[in-house]
Length: 446
Image (cartoon, rainbow, N blue to C red; front, side, top):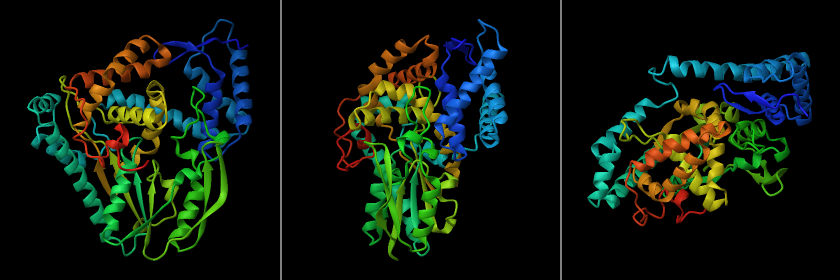
């Protein structure tokens, strides 16, 4: 048994002390610099605990900073300078963001595509969809099907623009990367983009980067013990980059196969070569992450980024958050397609969000084009489907220090969904809509 039973979070909340959190923090840092030795991470975590028990008296409750200081010390003393550096840099980055959140709250973020947002906001104003009250008024007037049509038309126009941009570069282009954070609509958009370009005689070859996952036992875990598939380091980035280089040079590769049932990867399985009239199509969370395509010249790749950039204010004058829209989308998709409890999606969302804020969103402005996948009409449908759940979760997690993030998100989403009129009938939504990827009823197979 450990001497410590509790630890203080930065918020001052007292939560149970868990060895696994230290193990996972060390292993994540090791993975970020190419390490995959879990037993070594467990050994180092035990040394951290021994050190803490040695320097602090019985009854002492350590705080997060105490533990992080100890981790840095043990890593350095045991010859893991690279891992220690990764851990220190991540810690400093988190501290900097916490300081900036309050100090520079009015400063524009470099991660946000402001020019694109201006166009989205302008469209919302022109269609009386820039506030929840205007949306509700149109719904009261029986205009829900019209809202659906207008939203779908705007989305289709953006895909057409991306297709035209790709066609202009076909002389040199070897690959198209469709990327964006979780539940931004990448799969449907990839299918639609491919269909548009096929009509003009262009042929695409898909590369499923899920086959490049490391064996499950080598994945880092979150504090709840679940494997983290969100981090780019869960993928064999070095092998992906190598294969992309070889494909762009006209060489044949053998794509690995990842068996999700066994959590094992088999190398050198499926032959693949690009012919002169073929372009590689990649749908991936981490398509913009530099390490994935570091040796591919920019002129050989087209980078497309997706995000539901909804520009709508609630009754309190605050804009609805894109991450909350994606959270609901993922809940619906996971419950239908993966038999995953929506509450689990909520309680783990802060890990999804943390990874995308580090590894996806900072690279949004490096994309060649950004598509807005938000549909104002999705909120009324979600209000009917999910509002009662969020009310329940808000009450359930209130006052629980281990579920603080889930409580804050549940309360915020509950407030958002309460501000729009619920719509039960989703029949006006086309069967090829990006929303069908999440609410079901799509003609596409996912």
